[in-house]
Length: 509
Image 1 (cartoon, one colour):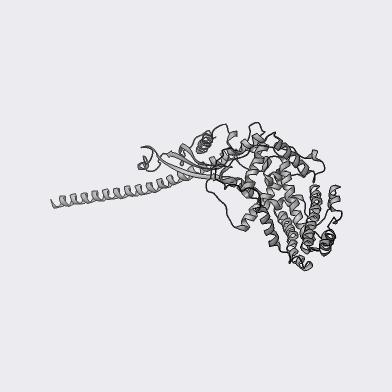
Image 2: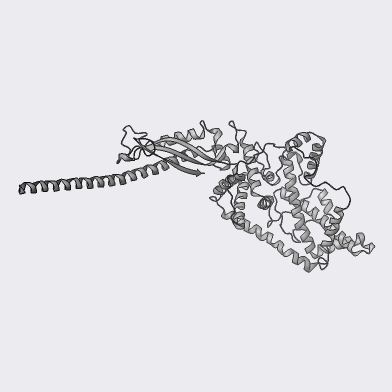
């Protein structure tokens, strides 16, 4: 009996050990399976992200080729796609999700999954956020191009412009009466004169409100006597600078690009960074846009740089705006030279004394002297602008050797159609355009750049609109996959035979 009891106890102990070891092995197998299935799940998630990224790359590879070839910009044009964006993206995702695509023998796919739904959560168009996406495209393009020569040229131009900083001190040294002039008093007299007489207008916002739009005004003025007189005046003023008015472009446009939605994306990197962005963007405009010296000849306007500066929808109006700005820039520099140059200043003072010196009123003589200097500088500036429009260079800050007129013949030379002599150390018309563009608002430049590109590309068979050009998108994909190691992971999201998940991804050009 004792032996039989001991045998039963031994068998019971052996059975307990067997059960214990089985449970341990089961737990170890479950742990190892769980780890392997977790790795499998993570691998499927990583591959889902890769498939989504590859699908977006495939979609973005369908960029508008005409836009890229002509302007170097990468945007996805919805109008050129045969399917909708979501359908096209789904097609690329399903193709990339199949590991055995293109093989005759299908092999087990350890990381296989099945895409179920692809959703586009957000789209970023070229017209959104006041054209910031166009600016990014331009800066990405220009930073890979050669900019060393540009920076060297810019440094030399700034060195010439910096010579003007010495003008004021030189004027004070050479003209003792310059400091004695009470400019504030003169300005006060002008202000008082502007305030006297005339009717008082009611404050803005009072009275009846008008709902007339700018389009209504343009339509009512089209073909009217006001428009005809304005055109005649524009032609007359342009004839001061251009010899052959028949060569001036008559093109005009009406359509404009309107900004899209705002995603609250802004770039503000400080003064120097903003200046660098502006310089690169302006260089892009100089390379890809036409000007008076090099008309574009496209379907839009011929003088594209002038349009970016002027904003009018006809070439003549933009030319007049830029020419006037150029004229007064040269006039200010020439006035500084005349005041700084002792002999020229005395010549103007002598003529002023001859004209009104008999009155014995010293302030009147000084006022006439300043008026004569202004007229003299204005005439010299017209000659300068004519030379610039012929492709010649004019000294930015003049000296006695680069000055062209005398006070006695300046008006006659303007009437004769003369031009200033070219200066090898000067700067040309396009450099002045660069200087003007530096002071231009970036949002205005982006919008007007899109206007020009859209006008030029709109004549294509498919048409073109920046409101259909996609710069970036945010997407979400839902997928399902079968468990490989531990079946208990099934049913987490999708049911009893598979688990599911979702991945999100965003991408821009």
